[in-house]
Length: 160
Image (cartoon, rainbow, N blue to C red; front, side, top):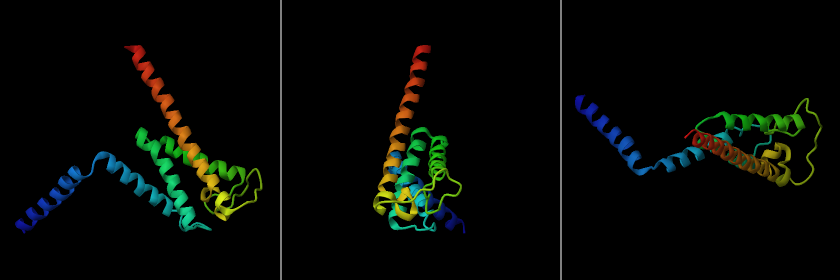
């Protein structure tokens, strides 16, 4: 039993600490985490009405967009805020959100146009319009983070 315990401990320590520490860099680990969490986010919606490979792929991209602010800040606040704002805006305006029809929205919208553009019955998240929205969120988030980071840096340099 003592031999097994020693051998088991040696193998696990060698593999998990030795291999992963030496073979996977911090950037690779962040990239892998980004992809895995985003794919899981996409697949979390597979059971929604009208879900498809396209909608799951687009939601995986959306997951990437919402992970990047967390990676940059190590704080979930902006990522959570973006997700809440996206869902609130879609449902308030009257878009179908992740396959769920909006109830009590300000407008009664009807999808007109090709599904690849509008996302069809799944909603904008599964179309090019959703991709434009995700890209806009990412660019505006990065701009916001750059502005706030520069302001903090300027205040610190003023104190010196």
